[in-house]
Length: 531
Image (spheres, rainbow, N blue to C red):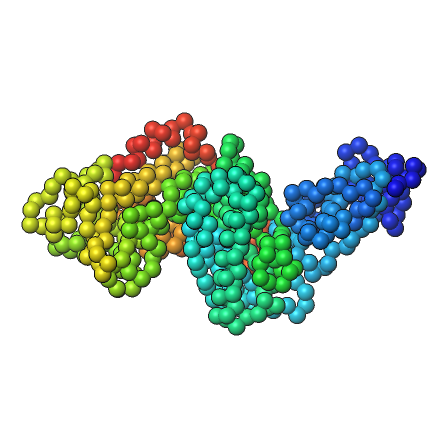
């Protein structure tokens, strides 16, 4: 019970009692009373350095504090002085942060700093909507030691980010399920890395996460609901540095976990990583970056400006939601071509075909266009000249075309599959076209064209241009940068000074919302054609 004369003051242990001013935070009050706390983040509640223990009158935690403080700390009355409003009757005791702790904000002091004797290893994780990839990085050697990947188990609750936003927003249980699924999968990947390289958890000093904004929110256990509704803004564009214990990662509890800063709700940290990794924001000449995945992101710019947009093209180009689609695994048709009037296919490992992956799908559509099996609208021909290899493979009545007579029966591409490719390619082409229009540029002005995503490593560029997934541009300008999200995360581990650049990119890039753009519908319908 508070004594009557204590109710008007905040008692600051080791300092003096003071009457709080209206709207004043504990950090401001303590500084006014000559007991200032370090606030490296400038008082934004992102670094966790200004921890205090509050008793007698204990306020509720903010969402930001819940990310930085453990459940035990919250129950003990630990709060962040920079975001906690000073209330009369409080007793406040400063709690100095552990100098080897993980609570250091990206852009101020990267979690590369660590206690003496810690080994030089870190984990970079790319959380894709469809696929997860984890890398073990030897920081001393500035090299990747091991790689492990898996499907994203969240796919069971929706193939795209909109479906997962909906599932996570319906209830707290939905959010918890999606968080547990991805964290469990990442823990398995980390275990695989440790086993592969004989590295213990004590030797891993940090984790860097690169993902789109929805995946980052789900990983952190933060509702992505705001991303799914206008104005489509994430709760966090820049997350505070988290810890392994908060995220339930199977590493030492205080291992820091840093997430790439997001540009907008649908252009996330994975794109920020790609921009910095390619260096496009530092160059004078114009560059175009297209990250092909379930949620296709595009960036146009140079050192003077950055425009970006996203197109929810779906997972078709990754082999998902296709009738016999699959990832690029054994037995997946990965390339298709026409040789002397006959169809030739190859599979990833040379074994009989069991399905088709994204690169094979793009090749197939390109070849079918060239051979007039489908027309510019994407429809199958009603018939073909008899006696040809292509005519024997076309089952016009069933609206499908035989790619390969595999060991489990035929592998086909259907009319619905082609339609999904059309929708995906139109979304990408529309995004590129509208960005160029906004910038007052043409495709010919682009000096460098970066194709990101694992898909870019395997596609036949000519076929991708033929069907309109990639703009028609000089071949020598095109560079496949692979998984720029994951490779960017590795680069940030090796070169921590890049965090400052990443924050600037996330702040300065201008996002174009395609869905509300005045020319979107017209441009999208036009780009559905394979002309």
